[in-house]
Length: 355
Image (cartoon, rainbow, N blue to C red):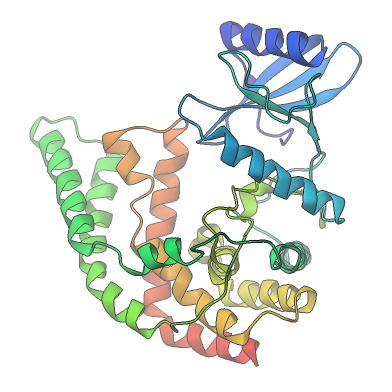
């Protein structure tokens, strides 16, 4: 939803979205622009004849629309509680997702601001404050009959299967090399996959060192710079809440943002950024257990180590904006290496912050 990231929508897509908006929302579209952002949905910026600006999210076939409605409810709860964000605009039947036709969409107010991939100290403080408020707000929400199901699965990754997938990707790359069609990314992917295969030996020990009891609750679920909008140093919107089920580790949301790949990979002062963010988070959510703060770095590291997101899509099923996924894979892999190399220092930093 940022002015800086727009490109022209194809005429067919634009016409189909405009038709839904006219039929279900009573909105007459003046201009529509497809945005090169997002991997799970196709996203548009719309300006209507009456001057209304809106963000339109199209859900592809197979999307669990019931879960997406629950995510929209979380977003509305946060906005109603004073956390900056976009309001969903219901259709003429009062539905937050229009699913009556072949093009299910949700429509949101257009929010001012821009995505910042490298945050200033003031922006980190604003982001930490907002996540603390989100977690405090969501802490009492119900977590279902088996809230630990997702965490149990996460704590028992199939390292052999991960290794087999890496080997499969390496075979594909080797075939491209033999065929003389390998490109620069193939070279980088081969290097990083070989490194990742070796890193997987550390996963069992890292998991064994995690505390058994960590807070499990409803989260934002995708709290990262790409889902935050800033106007200068002020946070203008928290976007794209994920469905509440299954709930997951509070330390995941916290560590993912505190040790975000863009920060760790590109800024030698990344420990200072983590300190700024977590201090603001704790000030907004003083009830957070110290054990979750201490664990958030290792949770972030384990999430990185056990994910092949980006490179897997490149060779098996390209994403909507695969070049972005390629870059993200390289950043995430580099970050995993940095966090592994500086594990003791990060643990000490988090222990100090936890008090």
